[in-house]
Image (cartoon, rainbow over all chains, first blue to last red; front, side, top):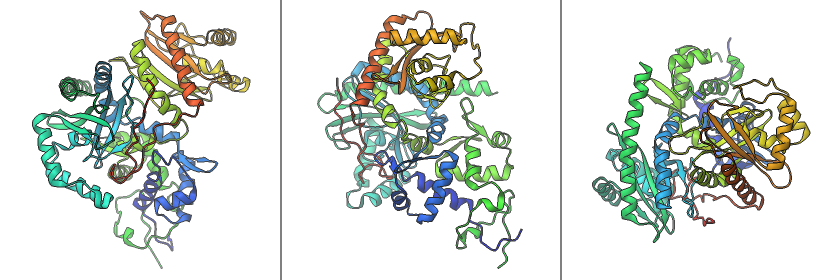
Length: 258
Length: 299
């Protein structure tokens, strides 16, 4: 079969599909074709055709005034093994911490240069203004700093560069961040008071297992209400328990497989 | 112009082709199956209990040639839609992030979540939120209690007739919806599963009177569940439940809490309560879809 046209590469098609799906956000969950075109920076005809395909496959759904992410993506996303495994180990600790401290607990991991909230537990009187699956700045939030503390310098540099490029004049300062990360390594906790979110103080600690940081947990509450020292003690104790459980779990999984 | 066609299924992939000006053609014309379909097929290999797949597993499950699967899987890893750890692939956090934005039940999920978490703590049960999808229920959120996690999974489905959640919704559904949901082969999943139409009709009547629905070991041996519909005066839009090992299971006490929570969720949902909308700012997250406004919550 001899085609008279260049074959479009699968790489291109997938990248375009990713641009379309990546156009949606927490505040923009329904997008018209025009908006989708603008946000994906693809030609309108391409956007229209690809969106139609994605609808046919269930990744997108049509809504009267545009497109939305489809339930198939919701269902597929929830099969993330990393989330399932981490949640299984971490959730009981977060639940317990939230009950004891009345504050909100969060579990985050580092994924493509951001801190992604994998799960969060609200306290009875305080609800964290995040959604599961939301990506947070790795340099500004306490969970982000906890996740970055044990990363190689070049990773930190790359993330700072990416955030500076996105934020233009308001990006993080590398030297300042490096100093903060050194403190996190010494104390084991990252504390952010009101700078990531107004009036919210967050205390976070990395979860280390088998020489790698597998995630970070945090306790957050209204500034002034959360006791930083006891929160730090609580999450540090939880992190030891989590890591022991996690390693035991992994070993069990390996034994089962063999 | 003569061009050698690159077969999608052999290893002679010449990246230089990609450097040519891509002509926007229907990529399905040449292979019968489009790039997106193949990617979808690969992603669909993953399921509950099959969250890790080796390359061989993926080939077996998709029926696609190894070279194709490898090329696609590696590309999906680059995109964050898959992750690779050792020799195994799994669904990537990137897809989890995007999937959470699914708009259909977004508001319901988001408003219900803190209530479900609170309910788990007060009842010492795992709690769940589900909606009706035809003859099945789909679990949207599941909150474990301590180390107890029910056998259900988020995004997973169960027949509506044999679950407390399903029956709580069906009791407050239209005649057509009910007829459709019951028009399935009803399997006795345990010795206690209610399968006959008269028994189910009586059960729906009980649910309409009591406002709650109970499943003692009907869907899983050893597991009890109490559910209540999320509704006002009309049809149920969803249901929530608390479930735990059957012994001891103080049904009445737990049921009361479940009903109250379902009512609270409905009130929030119907009064147009806004979900905490993440504010897009340059400082939060490279992708810009993070950063949040502080939210005052009701005690």
